[in-house]
Image (cartoon, rainbow, N blue to C red; front, side, top):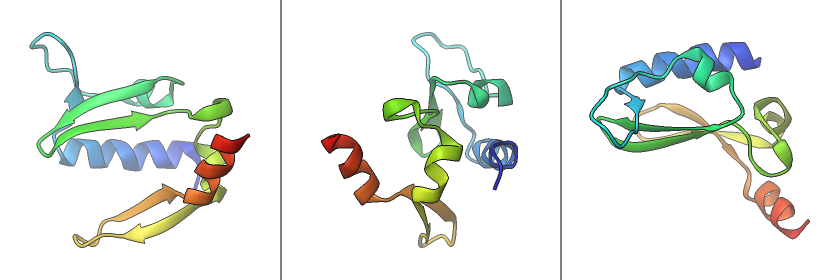
Length: 95
């Protein structure tokens, strides 16, 4: 999966859960593709509660670098998710 395809799918998902930027004021600003292409974190509120989208993690590793270290899971709602494997997080912590 490419980063562009991932962002398109993520945008569709964020719209389905009514995501908007978490802010100290009352403005409701929906995330856009530019927000998700950046290197910062996108802090959102959804109808299910807070959701933090992390663009990069330790050592500046982003989606494309981490994708090979993920596993696909299917939760009760049959939604597919990709999660970074625990072993990868432990290796990053130890280095």
